Image (cartoon, rainbow, N blue to C red):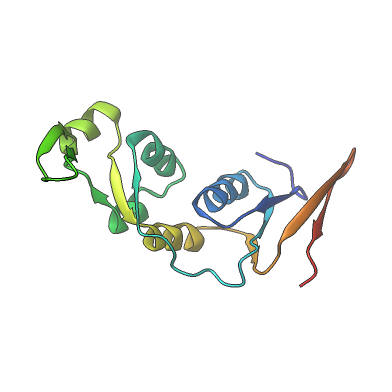
Length: 148
């Protein structure tokens, strides 16, 4: 566990930034997340996470929330662009989940983002905060922001 009083800045409130912030906050640090966008809008379409990624989210105690918004991929098919003919089909589903210890899941990006945002303990998310520079010293760092 990280000692009391430790503050960590995470730059970016996307899927990676929020996941990192959750892990850091659960270690005992206070986390501030800085996002340059003026609002967290539902952008992007679908997102597929393989078993290695979903296993890590399970380790952050997010198994139930991510499975409530994700869909387990039963197979992946590669199809020919011009006629739709299946070139390759790889079975996933229960077999992949059993083998890898976690499922491959498909998400609507906004749904996964929402789960991560709502699971972020003890953190501040500051919007419209574009970090332009990070100055490092022996006792910590200073973030510099764009005027705005």
